[in-house]
Amino acid sequence: MANDVDERPVLEAASRFFRGYNQYCQKANSDSLFALLNSMHSLGDRVEAVTGRDLLEFDEYRALKGLRNLSQHKEDVRSNFRNNPANTLSDLAFMCIVRRDQVENSIADVQEKWRSNAQNSCENCFHWYGPAVNIYPCIFNLGVRFYELLLELDLLPENESIVAFKESYDYETAGEISHYVDGKFTAPIGKVEAILAELASALPEA
Image (tube, rainbow, N blue to C red):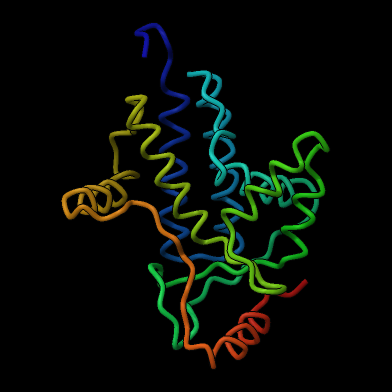
């Protein structure tokens, strides 16, 4: 980056995002999700203002931005952070369940010319289980997208906000482990119906 560019707005927003990400992972609830989505949006705005990079290039950002806008302007996006159902295998241990109708509302609120892109991003990045939608894999992967982008731009904050994420990222690099997750689960065929019913019952209240 050019020496005459003030990088502090990005560094401050990046610190806030990763602090929020850490708090969300440690004690996730609808309030921590609201804060994380807002810090995500702020970081996107500041990266674009300082570097010209539009973070809508990332499917994960586009999908979650719709939920952020819904929660900011219309209705709280309620979530249920929970363990994966029993008898399932996944590369993530947790799920963040939101209501399908709220995801659909977030897509409907996007301007018509961008709506199909938003819908495709949500379909690609979220996992859909009837009335329940798991957004945690998308949140996890967006953290990696942000980390790698800031690393590329030489705009990673040098403070405690990034320590845990950096340690995890470096461990995965050393072990040649993918930084990104799939987040889907597999289950015995005879258990699928019961698992879907369990997820439906775990939906946050409307």
